[in-house]
Image 1 (cartoon, helix red, strand yellow):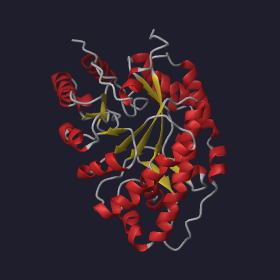
Image 2: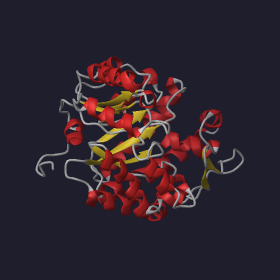
Image 3: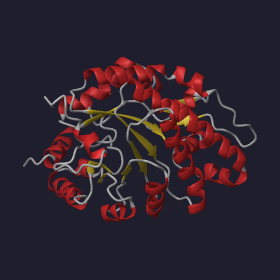
Image 4: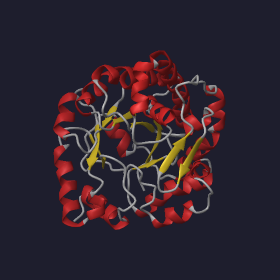
Length: 346
């Protein structure tokens, strides 16, 4: 059992300390690659019901921790609980992903009040409390939300994938886009603050759709709203460190790391560790960035790739993770081997 007086390894790294071996957690570590998760999922009619069930969501979080000596738990929820709580119709199609009733061009983008949204999300905060009560003291608890632009793309498109409608709206309806992002900034800040009050030690912002934006648009819909979100969290008294993960942002991670106010930078699979290290503020912790496909292949390829990541990030405070979420066809055996390699096993 970890020393109750010593902060969890993940928080030490987020505070700028370099640890060897680095702490490790895995995006989507509670999920469909685990047979026990698939059995648990059968107990609810819909994925949103699963997210709003504190007992089932807590069990999903604890399942990978029983199998693997990971250094963090992450809340089991979804970034689309925010638009759901704001009154937009959200559902999930099995095997295909989320669907939303899109914000159509001819309609006003009117949403519910943030205060009512937070009331709707109260089961999520109960889940955080339950997880915190079950964790060993050396394991950090990560809360999370989708960043405003990423959530807005789902709200405008009605699904993942193609983002042309959302990108056109930046130019066609700039004032309404700004208002939508502002509403998401406030609601997301309140949502994350409630997670911290419930027991989350740190936070991650998923900017999953950061790719493909020209610099001016990136500033408008990614940098500015994220900076406002971080500032609003601090105004709400949230001092917890924030990991920003701008997947697919490419060279624009320089602006993201330096201008948004996040404390640590999540590095995706396509981004070289050295590039992230060179453009981020000096001493900024970096998280990433193993290719999730290696957890499907396993064997020497997995071990070699994991060691390559460890070497690539040796100059920075580092949190070992994937460069995107783990895929359903990864195997628990390969995850176990990965953790062994990272922690220095043979």
